[in-house]
Image (cartoon, rainbow, N blue to C red):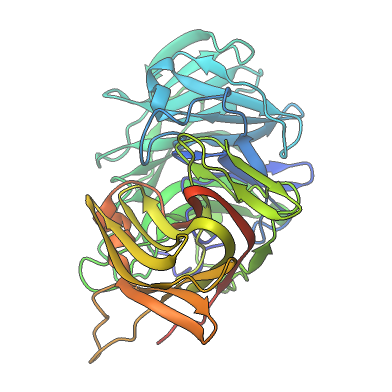
Length: 481
């Protein structure tokens, strides 16, 4: 079925959501791919308003996120609260042959343990417990599909299996399994169709968590494929019992814009749907009303501990410190940008910087736009594949300089959408006000052009020496017609 919900509860690059109920509310985690700290975690009391409280991977010795490139690292995962602890199981694609990684913590904020390694090769692992407390790990392996093992969670030792469960309805890429006990049935929820426009959710059930599983005749139970719905690529769902015993599902989707083939720029975002049980099958139903847009405005002067929203691609946080003057970006070997997820279709970000610094909107190392402040000038720079070009420049207006990036959705023309998803403006503040250095087509910083599984980020990097960011601000702008 299609679903009329059009607003995410977590906008921006929050893909592969996994949710669980806790004694004090609800917890949510996501894949994070090459970014460190990795595997962000959120808390909520109502499943709608979420606050990021930390990350699972906060120490470089927990797992290596430096070895791979774009869209490597932490893939689909499962978060559960069981026996008084949080459990998070995932795959690091940089070390996929070493098996699955199982982390635990006493609180959602952490600290999270070093991982227990489970020697089964695959992606998107799930963890569940049978009625007698036996621990089951279910994942997508190649070419076997959805399979399951029984493990000792303390050591990761495989006790039984692997055995095949159910590979869906025949669509490509059966993945993202989750196993649940609801009433007298065990349910196996999976994603099918690939994580692009054919993405969907299917379900099977059994009297045992080990199968055999029978598919729902109504599968897929959620998909927007081949529709004009503004949210596409819906899938990778996870179920949870919500307030008052009502059930819900989180799932991810994209909001593509622009002319054919359309472009999604924020990544796969997290949506929420009510779920009803009909004839002992889960049914996605339309909400009473759409979720109100979040106010994602924030300002950071970096005088205290770094907020968990800030991450670095394919690296760690070496050379990045906070203090009384702000954020220090040191010129060290292999230093990386410091970034946060973009959360709106129309937005503005500014940074007040000293030294050589770059404010950039970033998808990967080969696809970004930046305002760069060097010793003598400020320039607008575009990196598209192997080509880097300066688009405009002016004299540096002072020691401290304010850089700005903004994005706006272009107006439709003659009833047709503009070809690009948005227009990005690169500016610098001078004595005469804001000076626009360039306006560029947003499609070149989109997944449809760059490939991969992530979404746009915005942040700073040092440029030819140490840099200082005194203040960073982000706020959404009104979406143009």
